[in-house]
Amino acid sequence: MLDVSVLPAFLLAVTVILVTPGPDMAFMVATGINQGRRAAVQGAFGVTSAMTIWVLVAATGLGVALTQLPAALDAIRLAGAGYLAFLAITTWRRAGAPLAEASVVPNVFRRGFVVNITNPKIALFFVAFLPQFLGTTGGSGENPFAQILMLGLLLQLTGLLTDLAIGSAAGLFRDAVLSRPRVRCLLDGAAGTVYGALAVLLVMGVVHG
Image: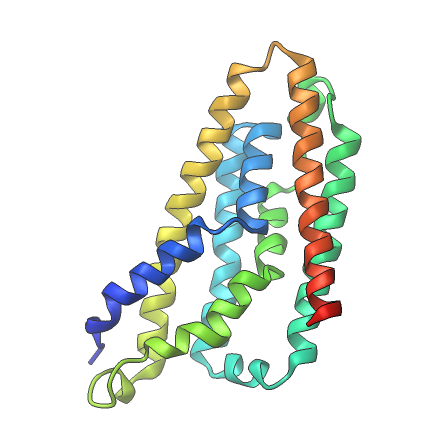
């Protein structure tokens, strides 16, 4: 039997996670602005699909093992920083590119997947925070695997809806400035700067952690 009594607190925690800026939000905004709403939808599903891996990690107990290996979490941060740096460089290089060229980006779904599989915010939530919502021993304690699966899938659904909304809003904004190359160039540069700043913050977190 699943313990639904934890849902109010869990949904509150999920809301905080989803509205907290991070690599996934930066990716959705940048994708919507640079490639439009269609690409943003693909990116949103890529971001969400990465959560499936983290759900399984938490449900099988591997997340608990990761919390005992700080080096593993640092490796996730560094991998995320490396990929964000790659996105920053790519975005800067394409800043102000003609629309026909800017709209063609290889495998936005894959990019979204990699961004979130190496997202330390998501990793820490699943390996350290999610197990706290297992509920009482008489309820979900009898089936912790199913409880974590239920909560993880709920997070995936709410995350997908949030990412679709963010990406679509960014895409609508892009549509409004399509005819203004200078504005698009500035937005692309800003997106690259955000990627770069997040990469630096992740590295600093490892160095000073």
